[in-house]
Length: 323
Image (cartoon, rainbow, N blue to C red; front, side):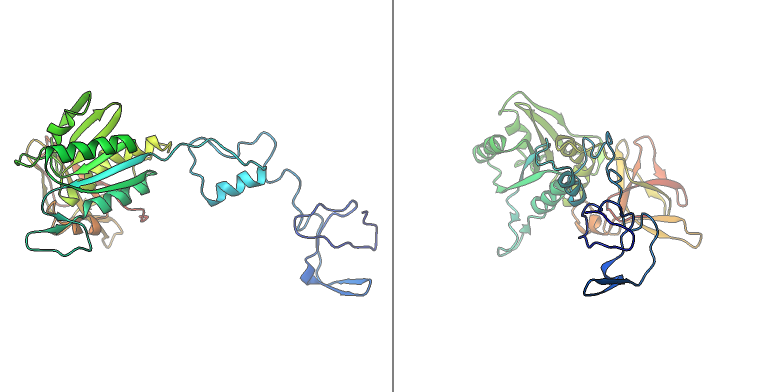
């Protein structure tokens, strides 16, 4: 088909431009009666035309290693006619809770019992950083049952995350059980931090095991600090740059003596549009509302006794909310 002076041709969106044509008029800007086409809007040379190769140039890098394949990236692959690409396998993460006091949400809650917060919160956290959670439920604090559950987890998962059973109580037997399952076993038993001091880390037959404290706030914060980077790396995600903002403290904040202290804070703005960091109320490690209300956390070095009111601090953001 060739377009000559005084003639037009109809084409569909995305079709090649006929020879001799150099612009396209939108259909809604035309009126057609029999073989006569009236054009009701002016156009310039090249208008409504996409030059060949203007979207993706020859030799251009369309996608890079480590990119997450979301809707736009899938569209790029389709535009290139690519039907298969090499991807990282989503790491399978086994999650289990311990404790005679823990009950699965939805079941009757008797006196002295609490619902299992950690398994569901940690499962969501695993998904957020690129993993595939496998919730193995609640395991009794009994050596043989716990050993059997760990063996099952090691068979089906690439990494294990547990909560509870790592302190100094008579039923806190996870470190002991882990040391019977394979070499090297437990490599970290307790960390000089607050919250999260009893955190235990093991490696069994090349698979990492993170045993977090039972308190929800402690478990989720330690997950963010230690476990999230490992899962993200296994999922092939690029190293995440810490999202931080500068703020001034609303009150004096004391640290735990001799331990690296992490304090969850809520951010507001003062009259000068500066961020003000206030420790989250009910900041006990067992209160899940601590993290639900917190925007981030500040880190206090173990050699520092306190941070004074009005002192500038770096707040590590916990949520995707932009500041």
